[in-house]
Image (tube, rainbow, N blue to C red; front, top):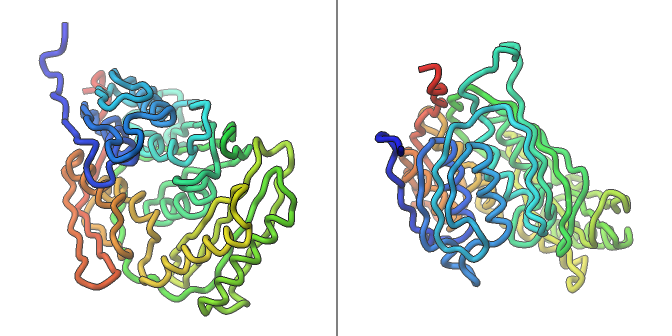
Length: 382
């Protein structure tokens, strides 16, 4: 017999704003974390073709595994899903393999918040040790239309560690390039009791260094060198001093790569501790120097506005701001559709209140009154 206190579904329109996979990922993640059932219609309505792809199916099923959820409509092509979460019990050891070149970084975006907060501690676990979940993700590591896994490792996770005092670690065991995928990433996630600290990030400071790495697998070392050359030249043209720039070229070992491809990741470090990224993926039909220049142009664009986060970190931190305790403030560049979508979902799912100040050209001040999330204890302990 169904429980008389079962929660009603929260209905989410999947066509809102960005109308793609991010809305889906954020909604499912918060549903699992907050134990709120959801029904999403018009899934990926603004993409062609609309509906779930294989990698979205894998991400939803990963979240469902973490929280023992009941799911409906979770199959390729579906434009409507239901997700009714159960309790999250940590730590967990999980493996997710969509058997495509779908982004491992996007799979991690679904799982990471769900694995962060532990409501209970097994009696066998010493009280001074964090409960650590182990997550193995397979798929693409350097793909277009998604963050490269290097971005997660170099920008996102250090940001979470510095500002929210959470310390997931990530190891890239094998890179997987389009169309074969089959990369392998291992993520270790120590849990916290919550709530997360608020953050106040409004001063970027001066750029002290530009660092980067151009990597290739299955191609010659010269391709990586050409990406470095293109990036270096574009950075010099933008006015950045040569002595601040350090970019390495790497050819991966054959045993560490599946498929043929490459990418370049650049980041700026500031004297206030900010990290600003820029990246590009190498493909057969693109000149390697143009790939390097593309990454440099993205980095320079994100430096021009003076924000403390780049356009990709901007939307990825919204969930964490909503869950933190108190009023957080972040200075960013122009608000992206992905960030507007993330804010919309966070407000609807958590009740956190966001205020967006776009009164200064090319600058956005994001303020969030977070909910101070702390996981509920298991029913058996109530």
